[in-house]
Image (cartoon, rainbow, N blue to C red):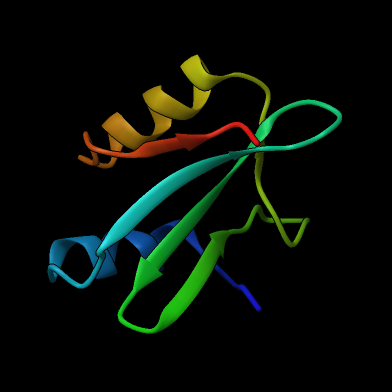
Length: 78
């Protein structure tokens, strides 16, 4: 099961080289959520109010990832 993490925790994991995979997962209704693998742990990015932060588009998600210096990620649509 995925554990929610904050943006600050994601930045820390990435800056220490602990992140093996970053994926944007398409939701059935609309939008994408961010899934991060670090070792044997799988995390999802949380928002301030929700368990999962949902990005409305790939562009929005991509801009967010670039803003925290993550330039390589996968997109899972099914």
